[in-house]
Image 1 (cartoon, rainbow, N blue to C red):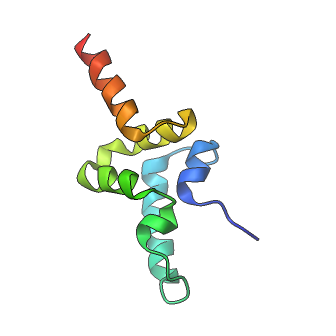
Image 2: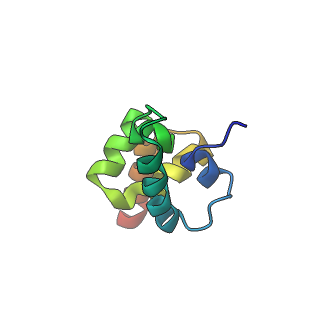
Length: 87
């Protein structure tokens, strides 16, 4: 069975509270590290750019999910949000 990763589940609406669920993902990843050689970024399903953005600004998770839903780069969503706030 091929389980969807965290980001894919957020995008398709399976995850109702991404922040809360992220904590569960940390625990699951830590428990599986001996058998699963993926990095935390890979386990979550983030691209390197998404992970870098989330790591430097943890409140960007909603923008990462929105960017995936819109099939655009996360920076485009962040730029749009910044312009909307400044308008």
